[in-house]
Length: 171
Image (cartoon, rainbow, N blue to C red):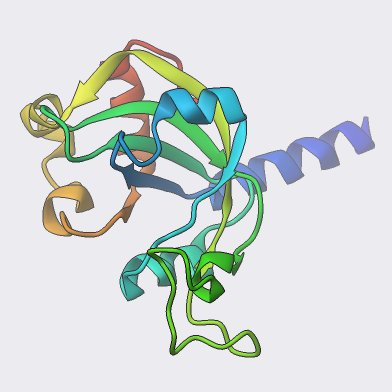
């Protein structure tokens, strides 16, 4: 009985520590369909310091993430994924043939990081930007305030509401 209680305590503590994110990708660069095929992928190529700082300083293994297709009409949350590694150096910054190459970044002090994402679900009903804006509970989403960032935090209440809009049980 004591062991079960300790396990429940650890799970409950982790749930209260879990964070949630919205991560954007242009579908022509990397789509939810490709993540579903791959199962897991590095979330690389992030070249904004604020988004990088979220990955480096705040994202942890087990955090929940919405996959958001940007640069489509209409932009929409199309899937759910989970952070499955801590941040580590983004190897594309050192590859001169990559569009994400950064000549000022050095391997001993890398400028850019990424985390790996694990596929959880593709939404049968994508939640588009208009649906998000129409929900009173989502009016203060960081997506609307920090719209240019490729990674934005999502509150637990927003996480639950968006799952509700998609017609699925929260992951």
